Amino acid sequence: MDTALSFEYAHDDELPAGHSTEVRTPHALVEHFLTEYTDPGDNVVDVFAGYGTTLTVAERLERVPYGVEYESDRVAHVRDEISTPENVRHGSVLDLDASWFPPCDCCFTSPPFMERTDERNPFQNYSGRSTYGDYLDDVETAFTRLDSVLAPGGRVVVDVANMKHEGRVTPLAWDVAERVSNVFHFDGEVVVAWEGDGSPDEKGGRFGYGYDHSYCLVFTKSDD
Image 1 (cartoon, rainbow, N blue to C red):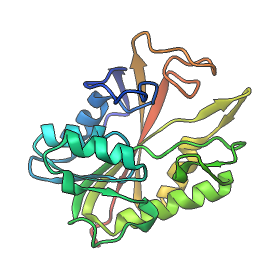
Image 2 (cartoon, rainbow, N blue to C red):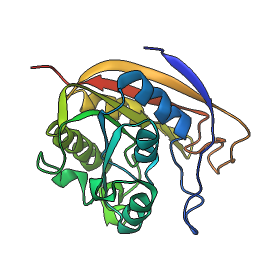
Image 3 (tube, rainbow, N blue to C red):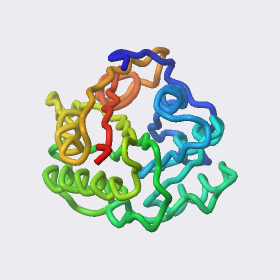
Image 4 (tube, rainbow, N blue to C red):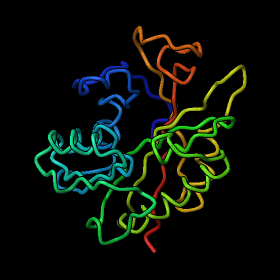
């Protein structure tokens, strides 16, 4: 496994009107890991499907895409983008169980981010209330739910960043790594550097969250 990668911060498609400022994982990053860890015909799942980057890349690579997304408008968008719209489930990953999808060989996902002073609930699209501790509990629950649909030996790749806010850093990537490693074997992290001009944000980074890099945390489900 490479421990450092670099990609242009770019996307292969446009978001629906009114959503152009959303932060998304670039398609090239998803393609890299799906090519590394899956073969044509494999089932690929994203339990935080968002606008469907993982699912559209999976389909283009001749994998079978499955996804869960909390927001109904995003579900509608993703269903329009892939040839198997019935494979996209509207709901919360916290309710995921084995009846939703067939066994999946790989999950590439990026959970909703939270910095430790925020009081909004990322698992309700930031509309409810939460604490950082509750959020991390939900992260662990989400990946425990994923375990029910991940095939033995399956890989999990989590795209995440640490977050800078008002001069302090929330070590989100490390906290997520600790919680997910309670469910799956932690193989290590890949540092991802972003190239290009980006779009400067108020926190001082070119690509969101105050940083010009992120991390892909790689896990494996035990064969037992």
